[in-house]
Length: 91
Image 1 (tube, one colour):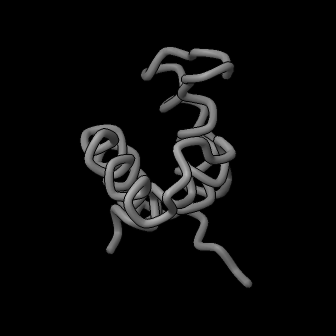
Image 2 (cartoon, helix red, strand yellow):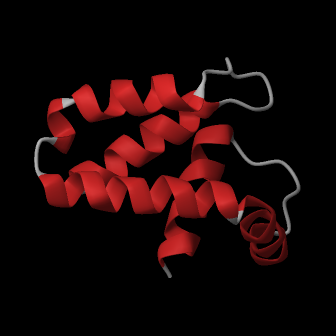
Image 3 (tube, helix red, strand yellow):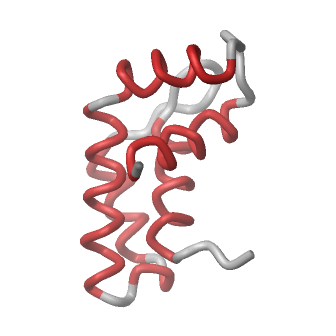
C-alpha cells in the first residue's frame, strides 16, 4: 500500500512532536525539518501536511475521545494512535 508523502511526513511529525515518553521538540524546529524532507518537495504536499498536523493537534482531545469509544482501549501504541488520529481527522 502506498502512503501519500504528506501523510507519511505528518505521521513522522506527530511522532516527533512529543508526549508520553517521546522526546519533545519545538514546533518551529519540527516544521523546518519536515519542510526540508524530499517527501514534501511538491507545494501541494506541503499544504496537505500543514493542514493535517495543525488539525490533528488542534482537535487531539476530540480525536482521542472518539478513538476511545471506537477501540475501547485506553492505551494504544503511540504510532498507531497517531495514525488513527490522522485517519479520523481526514474523515
